[in-house]
Length: 175
Image (cartoon, rainbow, N blue to C red; front, side, top):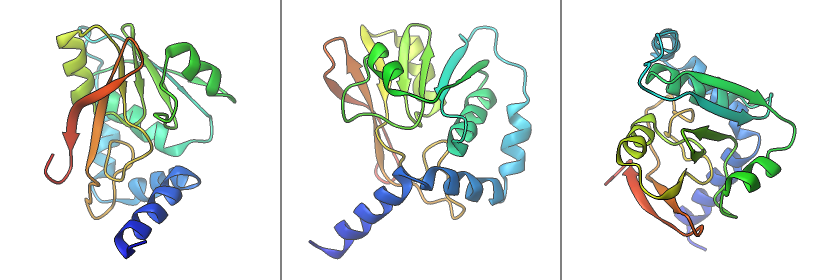
């Protein structure tokens, strides 16, 4: 196995487990984070639907993603749960496309650290689809920001009614 692939797998494993809380601590300590928190106190945009966000109580990066939504004008209803699997199954998150939190927004599922701009585009275009997924927890995605500004290239996927996915938006290098 080549060195860059090994490092990539190591980073993915770190970010997928306890890395969630660690990454949230790094974000909170990052320069400029206080500004993002202050923006989260902004008044919700009445034209945007409320985002119902399901998460575990102990997940720090989920809280940072919620702040990202609030800063973008979404009102957020947070629902802590001990078992995310029944929620993901009920909402049709495809197997292997999961992340640490799941949102319901105006009839769509939004799985993971999807940028608010992609959610707004989804709501504007209103495709016949289940929603959007961002599998895993890519470094630099909303809620997973890195202190040095690094953004791992990632692709937000549209989930069709049959559960198949296709690229919706590319972010990061070359995105």
